[in-house]
Length: 178
Image (cartoon, rainbow, N blue to C red):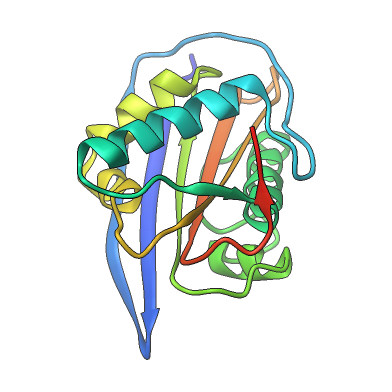
């Protein structure tokens, strides 16, 4: 039986590397079908997640995040890799770290961060889980972030079904609209 699973890590590069938070949890399943978001495009559910994150940031006195093309590609790639190879981790199956994955897709700014989640196709489910988790919450409310990438993918044969990745960055290099 699949379960929701999420982890968060935020790394701030300011001369030295400092990990702010890593958390994980388990909860009840939701079965849904679907697809991956592909390239630098976002679907309506991914746009819903952006709206939820930005509403949360505004409620906490922060500026909204803008979608960035390279961060979207990195997030999408990570979600697709997790769905295809049936795992949930910040390190991709080939050993690439989440931060290397972001750089590999052309995003060069700092700081960067990442949240991952698995188990539901719904943006609201992923957002609520992150909102109620200290590490994920810190990532979404990081004052140094101005950019976000959102990717989700599914494989009905995988344990969790749906996989979400949000990548965060310190500036918007190539803005994308929902």
